[in-house]
Amino acid sequence: MKKKSTIWVAIVFVLLAALLVKIGFFSKQSDNEKSKKEKPQKKVAGIIAKSSLLIDEISVSGSLQAFEMVDLKNEVAGRVVSINLPEGKFVKSGTLLVKLFDDDLQSTLKKLQSQLSIQQEIYKRQSELLKVNGISQNDYEMTGLQLNSLKADIEVEKTMIRKTEVRAPFDGVIGLRNVSVGAIVTPSTLLATIRTVNKLKLDFFVPEKYSSELKAGMKVKFTMSNGTKLYDATVMATEEGIDDATRNMKVRAIVNSQSKELISGGFANVQLRLNQKTDAILIPTQAIIPQEENKIVIVSNHGKAKFIKVKTGIRKSSTVEITVGIQAGDTIVTSGLLFLKEGAKLTFSTVK
Image (tube, rainbow, N blue to C red; front, side):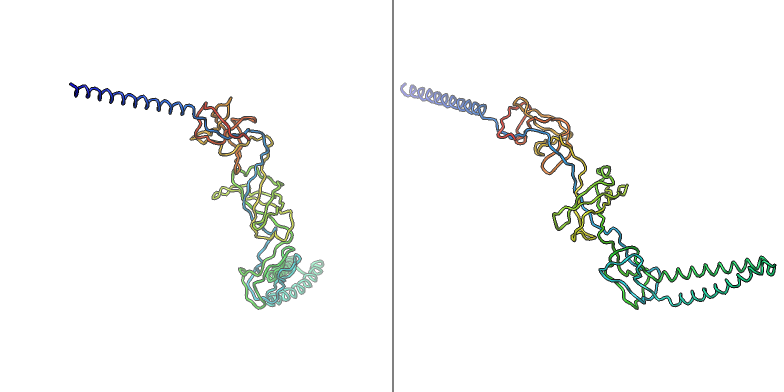
């Protein structure tokens, strides 16, 4: 009997211990839930939207070119008998630069000129005879035809002689010459180059979507690849067509600046200011939540998160223009976006 009583005491003790453990567990769980409910909201950063100056500017690559540049080549094959190619020196338009052998052409020209002189005397005498009917009209006209034919042959010969001469097509500076006296040259032989001085043009390409913004007279600025100094240029003309392969349009500008750094063929970074707004709304790019079809911005509405669909405009390196959705004065959430839900209470750490 005593043994049975001991067993019942042990059972009651175990039940009491289990009950105490269960009460403690629920008490702990209740404390955890309470601590979760009382856990403070994570703080976020914000920015107050305001109107700002926005300059729509793009940067493209370009290259400097001489305003006029020609590869000097002769029109006919021949032997070089004289050269006047002062390397790196200025020459006037029409200056004789290279002369080819033309003694045979000169001899033919003299022969034709002698024949022309004789034919002119014959024609003059026949004119007098025609007045007294001493010659038929047909013979007189045949002499005149021969006279005109000789004049035409002389002009052809003079043209052939001119083709043995290479003259400066415009005022410019001669580059490095590639031939010497006595060389046999052909029409494909590069003799030298000639470029205009103190006048350069800037060629560059712009994407198709900006093609309508470029007009003749538009001012552009550019820097050379090896410096930061800004130079000025004025748009002269555009190609008026989009390249099928690159979807870009070629633009040509006249360089207004003068500097020793500006050399034909140099690489340039061109800055184009296409448009300017004084009341643009700019926000940090990280404040936008991209979705499949929309872009969302979280705005503080009476201290709670409100998700607003927006439309964006010009994008800069760290900011983006908002064209539709928010106004100046709205407080935009810029951090902690992934932890917020619609209507969540907002606690800001900083508001700029």
